[in-house]
Image (cartoon, rainbow, N blue to C red; front, side, top):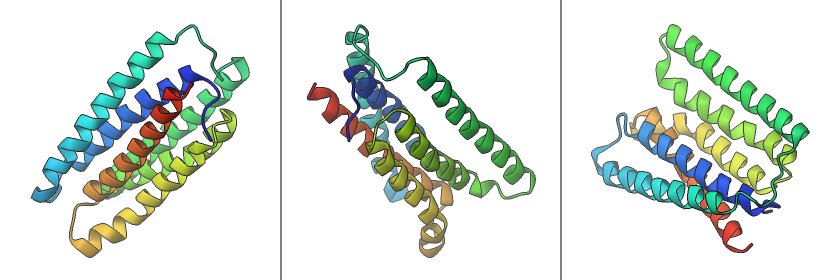
Length: 177
């Protein structure tokens, strides 16, 4: 379930921490007032994970990585497709007056993109993170409507928590090398 290389685990901590921070930030667009301190706490924990991940990565630059020429190309294609779909979808939603659904669309695309990355990188835990993120995004609209909360708040919290869990799993793996 863990990455094969320490450097990749460290990079995952930093990347997931960074994007968890982004999602907790997006959740702060219009959350219930009672959520604000928890969103800030999630952002602070995310920043600490970024620092830990970058530090571990920098200390282990001379170790191995799953990224060879072929892996890098496949990874780049998968991430490129993800960004293109999210960008095109955001433009369409924004242009049709449905901008409140942009975080859900982006969350679904992010969640789904973990499945091919898990295979490309031979990193099975990404399947779990993908399932959590995809589920969080899929549940956001009905939960937001049921509780009268902004869709961005619900999506941001679900995605932020999913990525924090991934960052902590990667940190645990990195600390066992």
